[in-house]
Image (cartoon, rainbow, N blue to C red; front, side):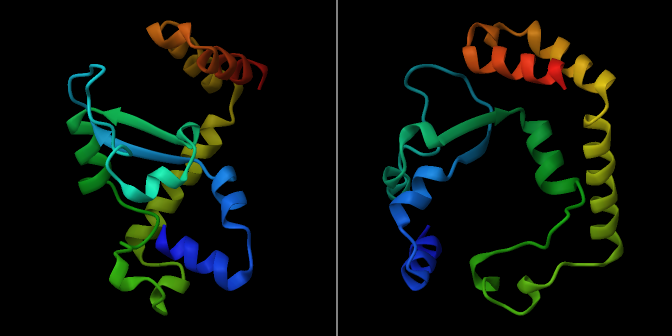
Length: 146
C-alpha cells in the first residue's frame, strides 16, 4: 500500500478516490469459524485506510491452498518487494512453464464463458447455505442470465 500511496502522490491522483474504488481479497487457509476468528485485515495498519466493505476474506482448505500456492504453474513471476521496479518485472515471462500456465488460464476462461458450464456452476452455488445472502443470489442470477 506504500507503493500505491507513493504512486498516487507522484501522479497527483486522489488517493482517497483510488481507495474507494479498490477491492482487496485475502486468501487464507481455512480454520474453525466463529465471531472471534481472526480476519487477515484486522491487524494490518494499512487496511484501516480502506472501507470495511472493500476488504474480503476467502478461506480455502489447506490442500487447495498448497496446490495453488506451491504446485500449480503460475502466469507471472514471483514478485517479492526486492524485485519491484526491476527491469524483469516490467516484462512478462515467456518461458515454457509460464506459457503453459497462460494456456491453462485461457482455457479455463473460455470454458467459463460456455452457458452449460455457467449453469452447472450456478446450480452448485444455489444449493449452498450461503444462498441466504443477497450477494450470492445476485451472482447466481447473473450467471444464469449469461
